[in-house]
Length: 158
Image (cartoon, rainbow, N blue to C red; front, side, top):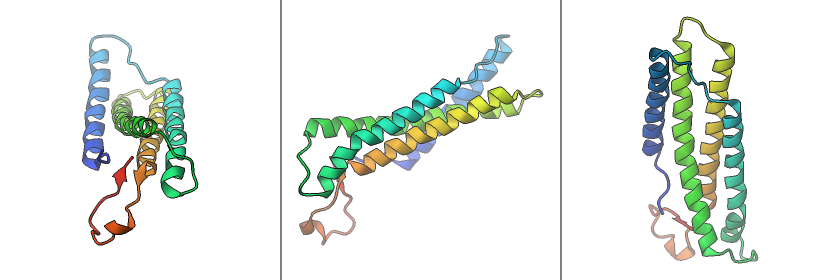
């Protein structure tokens, strides 16, 4: 499994920002109230980011030490897939939060509560994104001694 590319994360962030801003604009033009993301969403995203990192800790121990017990390869595969999904989701949700924040700041009347909720969503999504990328890194296997003569080779993920 390859690591998540930065270009993918940036593209998803831009798509999320467009969806967030245009979604709020569509709600406003149709006469409905806008929907700022709730603070509980930010809390949930941050907690999930922490859980993903905690799931990757046993894999990190196994790949870095020889005395650690063996980890089930299916568990390692699930954790690295969850880490990748968390990074992608965190990028998308951060983009949505940025789009909502941009929309809220362009209005003539700015409500502080809605702006704070959008900022909280961006922070929570950032924690999820960082947790996913950290867990991906923790699940990578270091190169073996016989691979030292190939300096351009990336570490393999578990």
